[in-house]
Amino acid sequence: MKRETLVALDEARRNGRAVVRALNTSSGEERLVDPATDTSPLGQEAAKAARADQSGTAEIEGRHWFLRVYNPPLDLAIVGAVHIAQPLCEIAKLAGYGVRVIDPRTAFATPERFPDVPISHDWPDAALATAPLGLRSALVALTHDPKVDDPALTAALNSQCFYIGALGSKRTHAARRERLTQHGFSAVEIDRIHGPVGLAIGARSPAEIAIAILAEITLQLRTGGASEPSAARATA
Amino acid sequence: MDDVLAAARDWLERGHRVAIGTVVKTWGSSPRPAGSQIAVRDDGAFAGSVSGGCVEGAVIEEAKAVMRDGRLRKLEFGVSDEQAWSVGLACGGRIEVFVEPVMA
Image 1 (cartoon, each protein chain N blue to C red):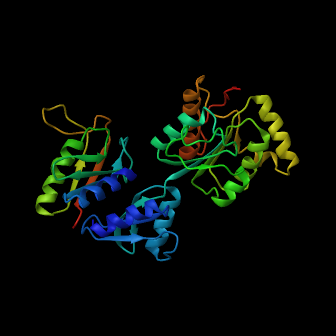
Image 2 (cartoon, rainbow over the protein chains, first blue to last red):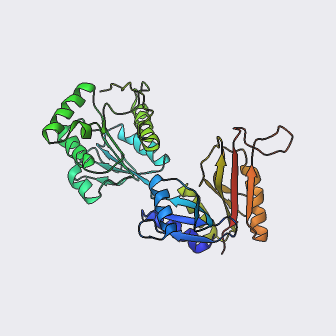
Image 3 (cartoon, rainbow over the protein chains, first blue to last red):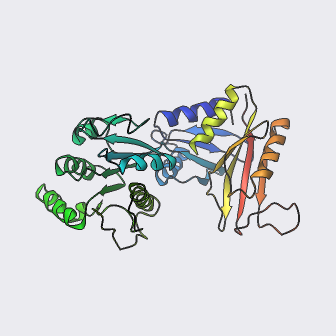
């Protein structure tokens, strides 16, 4: 690997851009491929690998390449700077997410409570218009307050984010479904929202609930939710 | 994964030599997927992983050799055979690790 390559890969990561390094493991030849713009056969294979977030070998025009995908970090938007959000920030960072907290209530979303986390005091619809959710984004709404949660969920449902979760009991979630239906969302669309949020692991403390939430996000990311246990955790 | 790049870059900037190992092929139940990487510093410090800790020691030794002679290496690891000093994967899988120097 050339030093310039290493620097370019590190810069792409810092700037949130996907890049693929094509490596010929016989000769050591390397090429940096921009999967978003490169339309060559190599570029197309690279784009496929980047979309699947999976590195692997490819034979292109008789040559063997190892395509190493460097995708930008995953994005977790947490709406509601509540107690659960604090441990969730920590473990999500460990799992490789860029984490951000959105809460217009300035008493909750403070740098003291969320050190080293970007905080937005805008309303969720405004915050998510400024920094939109993408394919590698997850959103969790934790405020219990429809005034704050609903605009966040609306923005998430209108995005391609891979996971949406909302804290609240089954009853709260049923009421939420009703409100979103009145806003014009179909049942299938609303089914994208995981509520009650988190896998059923019997979580009680904020840290345990955070683990349940990140476990569910991971399940969705890695399996598309295919092996999801049916039992939903009923928490307040 | 990302911290591997950051560590490698940081070490280079401090004047160290660095080699990078990448899992380029897996067969069976390998502990880490293709693309998993380890960065190795000339004094043996390392970041990242290519297995569950089973073969890192051997990869680090080869990485030091790569830094000395600049030659690429392809290493293959399979099941360990219980003999003393054999390096292998307890999980029963097989992996190929490509080790290359970072050229200054």
